[in-house]
Image 1 (spheres, helix red, strand yellow):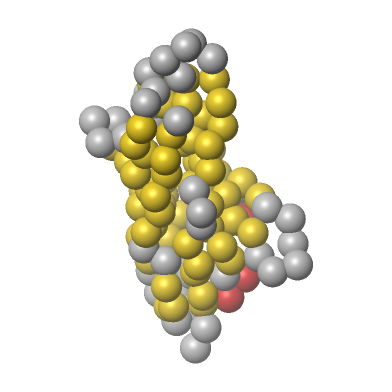
Image 2 (cartoon, one colour):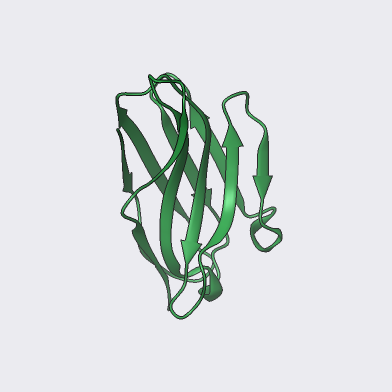
Length: 120
């Protein structure tokens, strides 16, 4: 079982910055891929960014150049630095981990989410 705990959400003015963190803990062999998703009210959950254990990253077009995902492998923690925030970035942000369990099988795990509000 893998537990994901997110932190760092809050209220920020347009143009401001926030840094989200997600720490993974529990019993697993390795986490080769971690990601951030978001879900705005009335919309489907969408991928924001993901990062592999070797540092390969992928971003949604809407956040390219403004958001940066990073990974601390030793701490099994993923970060999302969000700059130049826009009102349309407001959403619940969810951490996702594709973990390889001790049994060798892979499974997706989700955090409970952290709310980001962008408003003046």
